[in-house]
Structures are given as structure tokens and as C-alpha cells.
Amino acid sequence: MNHDLRLLADQIRCWGQALGFQQVGIADTDLSATEEHLQHWLDQGHHGEMGWMACHGSKRTRPAELVPGTLRVISVRMNYLPDEPDPGVILDDPAQAFVSRYALGRDYHKVLRKRLQQLADRITDVVGPFGYRAFVDSAPVMEKALAAKAGLGWIGKHTNLLNRTAGSWFFLGELYTDLPLPTDEPVTDHCGQCTACLDICPTNAIIAPYQLDARRCISYLTIELAGPIPIPLRPLIGNRIYGCDDCQQCCPWNRFARPGDEPDFAPRHGLDSSTLLELFAWTEDQFLRKTEGSAIRRIGHERWLRNIAVALGNAPPSPVISQALAQRLQDATDLVTEHVHWAIQHHH
Image (cartoon, rainbow, N blue to C red; front, side):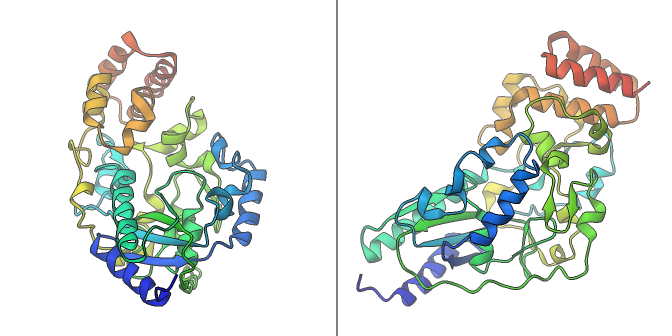
């Protein structure tokens, strides 16, 4: 290749920002330190039922094994924080339904993947055909570790990526490429002595700095877990029906976060202001229609009802809640029935 690679790297950053990414960085593929950390996490069983975290061997931490020929990873981030009131107001109202901020709008996988493809097309226009593959939270990719190597931030004590000027309210995406581009320098860790995220976690899922036991994490329990939610953890979930943002909301670095300007990430179907009873009444057809193009759809209607049943069990008792729970028993699956019964008993 006779193209100036340093110039090309600068162009890639400019093209990426023009496509709506707030930052673009370039990393090499050496994840040996991450591989050791991941293996320890898996050995401890902290991944719970996320078997896919362990079933790809070393492909997850060795990019060239996943995509042969990969020399560099172009890592990007895109802000998504909705421009809305403090979500703490929702968490303080047990009648309201809390949905993690990232899931309020259009499915980020589709949005970022389209932009990454456009970025690859721009590169192709300049250098001709080259080897690449785009990823957005898909396939065995260590996106946070790669983003940290690419200088997009550091991995905080809550295990999310943090950026000094943007906090953590952003999505990540990657282009694996065979272009030998110059790499960016990682940034240093700026968590210091802060333990806000460890202290606030409702289920104590952050068992030590930089160590998350997913089996206790509300995001895992409400999204990844297919079966019953462990009974001791149900009261701790509160009114969180899809994910949890507590460790991000309390992080001092998120004081610097700015709302995203991507229209696709704006809240849809009133999910930022719905009550538990409104959402619990959705039929499966309504659920599928109102979560079309949303990340929420992947959990399915059954888990949706399971999660809301738990939240209703945590709400103050009322005749209208008791009626809604009893009515749902008429056509509920075994999984939903068990959680509805728990909610009813929790009110007595």
C-alpha cells in the first residue's frame, strides 16, 4: 500500500466524526492482559448463564483468530444520553417503570453498524478494497478493552468505559481491519479513591473494584437471565424492568456527559415515562409492535412480564395492582405465573 498511513488514520478520525461518532481511536490486537483477566472471571463463574462468554476459546481476546489478517481495530463511540429529567425521579416513584437509558430509543446495534459500514466505504474509496469486519456488541469481541487500548477512555471500577469529557453514556463499535495503521495511546485511569459505583449498586454486584459478578447485576437479571430471578434479589430490583444505570448515574465523571444528538436514540413509545401497570397490560402483539427496532425486543414478552411482575411486587400494595396481577394469571406461562405469585405474596 502506498497510501500515507498516518494521514489515513487522521482522515478516518475525521470521517468518523462526520458520521456521528464522538471519538475514533485505533488499537493493536494485543489483549494478553485482558485474556488473563477474562479467564479468571470465567473461572469464578461470574458470567452466570452467559455461556457465549466462554464458548469461543481465545477468539474473543485474539482478534486475528476471529477475523484472520486483522492487524488493527478502529474503535468508535457514540453518545446516547437522552435529554430528559433526572432518571432518579423515576426510580423514586415505585409506580413508574425504569428502563435503562440505552434502550429507550432505536436499537443501537443497527445504528452503529450502518455508520461503521459507511466509514468502511469511505476508506475503500481512498485505498481501494481492504480487509475489514464491523462489530457492534456482537460476536466474541472485547469492545471495552479494545476501546481502552484505542484511547477512548479507561475501564472504571464498575467495569464500564469512562471518558474524562463524556463520562460513560456512549455506545461502542469496532472495525477489525488488515490496514497497519498507527495506533493511539491509551489514557490513564482516573477513578482514584472513588467507590461511588460500588457503594450504590442495589445488589452489590460490583464485588471489588473492577470486578463484576454478573449473577447479581440487575442488567443481567432482567435481560440475560432466561429463567426465574433469584428470590433474595427480587426486592432489590425495585422498579427496574430492563437494565440498571445506577453505577453510571452516580459516577462523578458523568457530570461532564452531554446528551446525545442522534435522533434515533430519542425515547420512543413513552418508555421514559410509563407506569408499571401500563406496560404490564401490553399483549404480546403490543409488545412486539412497540419494541420493533428496539433492543428490548430481544428479551421477549415473557421476560418482560416476569420483570414487571417483580417490580409490581416491590410497589406499595394497592387494589389496582392486585387486580392486574390476578388478571395476568389467566393466560400466564409458568415463569410469569411464579413471579406473579411472588408479587402477590409480597404484598401480604
